[in-house]
Length: 89
Length: 243
Image (cartoon, rainbow over all chains, first blue to last red; front, side, top):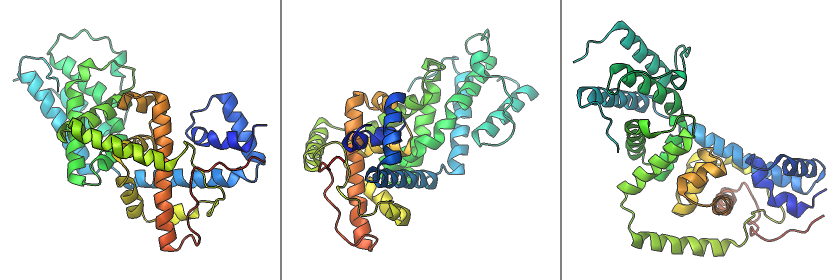
């Protein structure tokens, strides 16, 4: 069983899904039985939920979606009416 | 001028549906189509557009929050930045290697467009780097956990007002804000962020963890001021005892 310090050092990588499976299992097992670390895990999970909420709040305006698609069609028309080569930004 | 056939119109309608998140999506993936059309032909343009709509445009939802935070909440500027990103990407779509990571490619284009627009001079970078180093020194180690959680379940995260959170994100030093937004709002993996920012993965991790600590510290101050937490925030970064 890994120690609290090791579990907490890897906690963000664990939550980010960036740990190797073996390390992930070690952290998971530690969190399941450690009354000191679990609250910190809960705390960070709440942080991620908050970030998710902010992400959802910042949805793409529908008018912007339309504008971009119209611009793509314009670019396409321009490339078709020109010499056939795409411009590079 | 080419005549527009019913087939052309139908393909454009399908692309518009895909773009707007509506309608059927039963289409042949363009990367599975053997391209035999001559350069500059309408058929090739259709395939190019279809490929772009299918592979690049789905990431619009991920790029937008990133642009919004880069512009510190200026919605008009973010709209322009995102539009520029996708138009630039479409122009360069023929250089994109199909099947590779379109998401990190788009974030890179977005960031480059932002930096170009803001004329990042060497002097500004120097000041910024100095500020960053001071912030890092002030924060101490990489991992960020209070010795004893004041709010073990993170209840204040649920209570926090969105505007306060956004304000706290926008107030982070640019190098921290960038990596945090790419990860926590853009949902990019460490390797993708490393690609976008041209940094080693180790640097991305340490910068991200410091950014989270700094943001959480600022949110704790908000929470304290709002009365969600009665005691002052414990200084992050101190090593806790192992059990």
